Image (cartoon, rainbow over all chains, first blue to last red; front, side, top):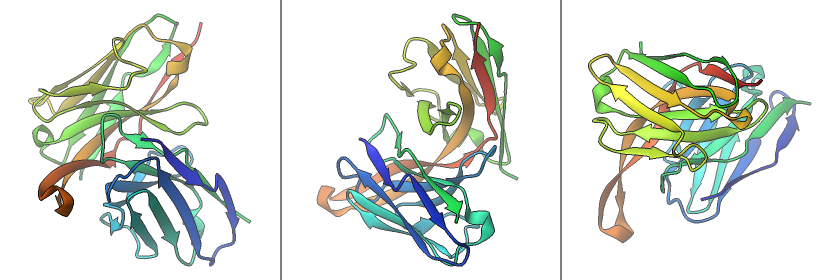
Length: 107
Length: 131
């Protein structure tokens, strides 16, 4: 299953709300996770089952979608939210497959 | 505290070998499927291999099949990846990741199924393949 994220880069200002997109080449039902990765750090799980926040993840992060279309919305961007975000399907594995990432940068 | 700590990376020549290790703590290691995921410099995440909780089921990415071997020692709470016949394109940070089970009722299939997502990651160990 090929995962495609858009856009590749998003330039936004702190305080704004952003929506990142992820599309699967075939249905993954709701078996979709989102990860955040900051430079030099390991990925951090944000969302699983398309819309369930992982423990300790702030409520400003929300996920939605099912089938082949998914979104990650970050409300009221904080400075610590600027990072790369990856989606990953875990419906049909092996292999697990990741999107190529969306880089969120400060405008 | 739930923790995964990788070690064993380094600089190796093409064709060489390394054994990567991942030490787990803070959770019941023997009950979790474990994974290796890698990230080449400046690139995205690539799943490498998975091993079931008992070690009975093992899977590899096509790119490493036949060259890499995953294993685990539940008595030692440790995961391993033996990497052989290394190539320049294997240069990457290698992450150890725990997979947690999510039981989902699928109406169209008439039953509940288990799905596994990666919820805990180590900081990674770097493998550089260069002559």
